[in-house]
Image 1 (tube, rainbow, N blue to C red):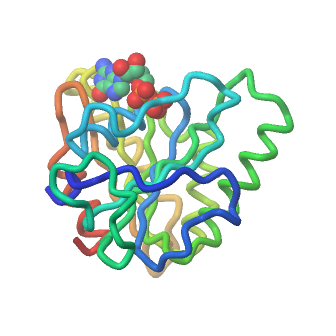
Image 2: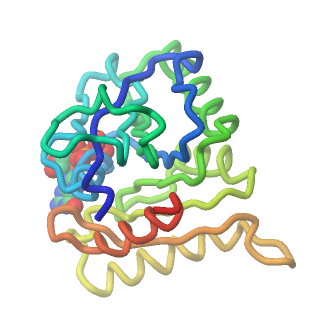
Image 3: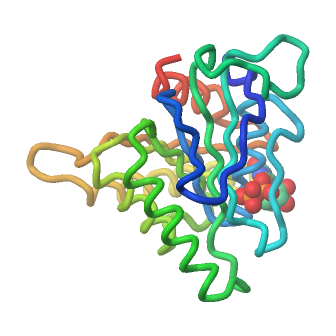
Length: 218
Ligand code: GDP
């Protein structure tokens, strides 16, 4: 997959530092511990491209990974010329840490809220949720901030290996039923797709890969 070409590009702490490229990007959002880092590593076929920060104070970064433009065999592509990059994968800070202070939550709100609502280059959102407890309040907040613009959302229900077959089917149906509330008479308010996913058992990896490449036009 082209996603396997992903290389670290940059880390951003403030909206003003977002890359001034016009390259299409897809963002990965999720509660801390939902399996976001594992999903990104699985999809990019890399062991440590992305690592979860277990320190709440260090979770407020947006990490950019570039697709294309990397020199074969090179681990980082800081040297890659932006015009050669075809797409960006954007790892948003995990949310929902219980220990986080009010000020840090406020920073999260401003950073993520502004990013998903205003970033023109952002073509789609990948919402990473534990298949056993999807659509927590903060997930719904992210979804509604983003999908208000009508842009597509891919929901990955992670750790599907922890569910048996009937539980997995029920989780999928329930998620689809949840998303159906975002319809009016004309149809869905934004395009969405739900996929059961397991980094451990590699469930749904090909489907997610295909969906992401399609959203990015790769
Ligand atoms: P993040 O905080 O969302 O980046 O989550 P991580 O990717 O670091 O995963 C959080 C925890 O869930 C870790 O202990 C992972 O080993 C575990 N985990 C992640 N993906 C899977 C999966 O597909 N199956 C199972 N069983 N555990 C997973």
